[in-house]
Length: 363
Image 1: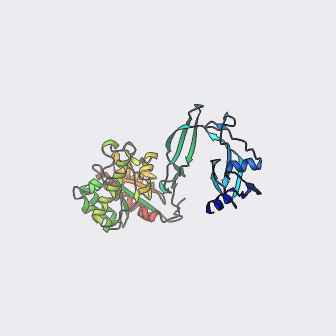
Image 2: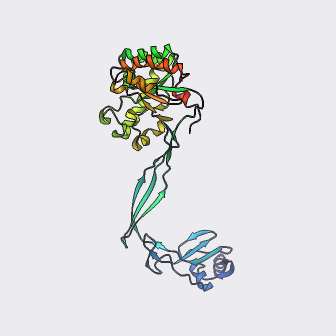
Image 3: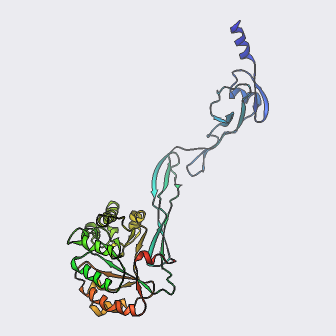
């Protein structure tokens, strides 16, 4: 009797909703049976090349079907009473292909022409796939993920009527001459920013001068760990590998922090002022800003005290002045400061750190 009841139930049609109409499906009650009962004849899709052009008509997906919202591709899929079925034309099928994935490097977009270079946003690489059709041989490129670019805003402080100048010193600490620079600055109540070289801090009593500079209110920043020595040819982080560039900055920070006991400033100056795309890619996430200059004192070339004084006395409100307390004999720099600082002070100028200068509106 049980077998008879089962066989009787199996013989009953399944009542489904097909394309918004009620339909009774008999036989095995499959999608194929529903198609036969409905008279629907789906049109197959086409086989297309990787660029979307036609390869073979009607060689794509033979039909499109869903049962209760779920895609099905098997004509033998079973149906039950109450099922909601949608059946329509098939879709295109793309030819098999070989795919090569590539990275699209992010870029640092430059805005403005000021000497303070502020990094905004974290760059993120994009992705591109190159597909080569195995049947057609057609090659197409497709961007699967757009790169996210960072922005370098090259800005200038708007100091208004404030007669302020940012004195900056590179390549130290350097034995007693860094102390001599600090003596002159102290005599005139001047504050400055020292872009230190990490391995100089670790030798020739460099730590003592960094401690003193910090204690006297000067800003201590890094100018890299060893001024891009080695593969950087002591001039350009861009010549170095990504890993080397990152190490130059991180080790530069560590050298400062070991002496001051506080987190190092994320204000940075690149060796040689070389802050190209490769450098930005590597160290952009590590720094707040890279600092250029408006006035090069020329002291690095030892042009004579008078020539250095002339450059310093040409400073204007909001200007950033490049000098050196390291990299060799800087006695000319020390003597030039003794002449230029009182002259500028008489004109009403004050000497402030980069952090203080960057508190002004930047545009």
